[in-house]
Image (cartoon, rainbow, N blue to C red; front, side, top):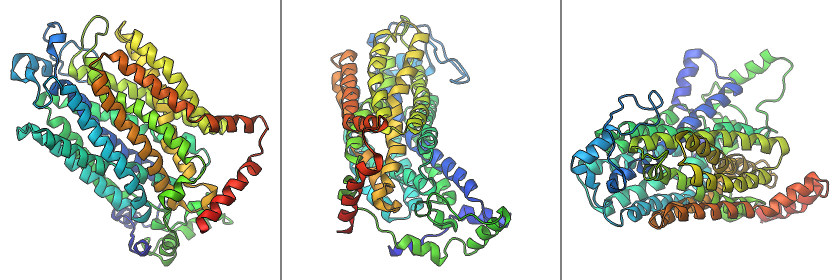
Length: 541
């Protein structure tokens, strides 16, 4: 594409280069890429949490909670206690007119409307994912990600402004969520493509498992930020994360080198996972690196390498072996994960733990421990899949293990605070483990599949197909929860069990193939050679 020649080195890197007098090494750039993309997507997830935190404020059910001793905890978790009997927000809810909630979410169908704004966000996110993936393979990922973050932060903040503007029209909140969902779709295909541009397949599962902690870190930070400012009005719970999101966009614009070519290094996916051929000594190699970037990342070699690549279409990307099964698995995996993401704080505030109800703010704090378990699950799933070279088997095993973990949590989570914390973290480990593995290492593996002949321009497209399909499930889960919760939370957990079971079953063929391969029934090179050749011929056509 002609646009490739217009791409420039990020201004922040140019400034650092002038200050240092030399360029960073490839290893340093890799660390920087991991850090910046980690922060960027943590911001995306942080901006998705406010709606789950404020659900109990928009649609309170004080009649289900017995009167409790008034207590205002001035030190928020993690500095203070996770469990407190009552927060300042709850005092205001009982004392003032705020106990009626916020129209139009405080009526009899309030939970259904809350579910509808969730599904509006996630439906637009899912639809936008397919378009964003193709655009991400065609446009400058740095600028694409920058404007996506700024736009998303803007509309998240506008949702919160409905509080200060005293807006009670349902369509306003619906439109804001839909717009935010479209802009949020720019995030995941972009960050996965950037990381895939800089890292080869060796230990990709472990590296991306650790890196994928940004999802849980973002959820935790978003919960803490939204809960921390909730006492000043629920609008601030949206405005604060929206502002953080926009600032993250500025960081990406200044420092994210989306492609190795932008800073003078060749494409890793066309150089056997190495940036520069081995030199006789390290000093000579460093000299070559400095000379290569004198032209500020706009050398003809870099631009030419970019222009020679063409983005892969959606149909061609779907034909890559493994894309469809993993995409359908992620549909049900995200259905389960996003139901916890959007409804866990509300569930905690409406159920007893150790015979007591907890405050809205405490429910938000406690829900972050689910994501702490998710961090461990993502790293563990990545390590195991690397160790045994069995992505599908690892993902399916985690999904099957999530079934008893969720049932035990629902049945015994109310016994005591300690039991609730432990069981919640275990459930988070098994639920988020396969979700993290599929959206990171698996997507990157398939996006740099052998059939693509080293062309990494399919990374964002493949990621968009897999995560876009998963996001459709993410939209369905919270929507069904809004209706099923009126029948009782037991119905919701049965839905989650069915979703986890379907996710595991959809990988059955891939699991059998991996097991047979490990047992020596299938020779890997011969078994896939025909598939590779057929797909290569299709691409040529």
